Amino acid sequence: MRVMLIDQDRGRAAIVEQSLQDAGHEVVARLASVERLSQEVEAHQPDVVIIDIESPDRDALENMSVVSRDNPRPIVLFSEEDSEESIAKAIKAGVSAYIYDGMRVDRVRPIVDVAVARFREFQALRNELDETRTQLEDRKVVEKAKGLLMKHRGFDETQAYHAMRKMAMNRNQQLVETARNVIAVFDLVGDDGI
Image (cartoon, rainbow, N blue to C red; front, side, top):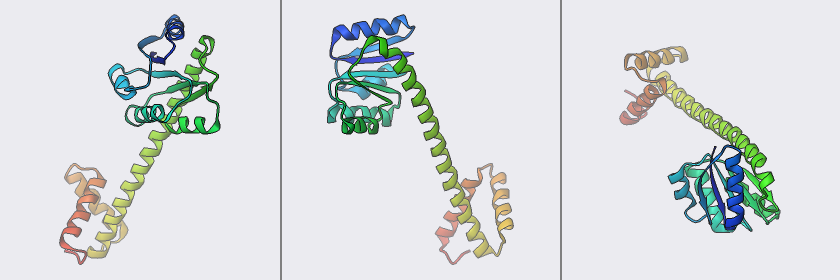
C-alpha cells in the first residue's frame, strides 16, 4: 500500500515510516503539515493518508474535505483532541478513522487496515447510491417522454415505449438519450404538440 504520512514530529514520523515499510508498505511522502494536502495527494497518489496533529483546526479540516471531495481516499487522523464536536467535524470532512490519544507505532498498521476496509465499503455504497440516483433520473426522463407521446400521438404506454425503443435502436442510442430527444422536440414546438 502507498502511504502518505503527515506528522510534525519528525522523529516519530521516521519510526512510523520504518514500521510501515517493515509491514511491506511504501511511504510515498512524509510531510510536516496538511497545507497543500490536496496538491500533495494529487502529486503522490497515495492509497491512504495518515495524519497526526494535536487538534484539527478549520484549515486542516478544509484541506481534508477538499481531498475527500476531489480525490477520495482513506484518511486516518490521529489527534490529541477527543471532543465529540472535533470528531464529528473530522468525519464530516471525510476522515475514515479518528484516533484519539495520538499515534503509536504499534497501533498504526491495524488501524490503517480497518480504515481502508471501511473506506472501500463506504465508496461502494456511495457508488451504488449514485448509480441508483442516475437510474431513477433516467427513468423519470423516459416516463416523461412516454407521457408526451401518449398525450400528443395518442399512444398507449406500451406503444410509446416501443416507439422510443425502436427509435433508440435505429439511432444506436440508449433509451434515455432518445427520451431526451423526444422531450427536446416537444419543448421546441411547444406543448401543443406536433
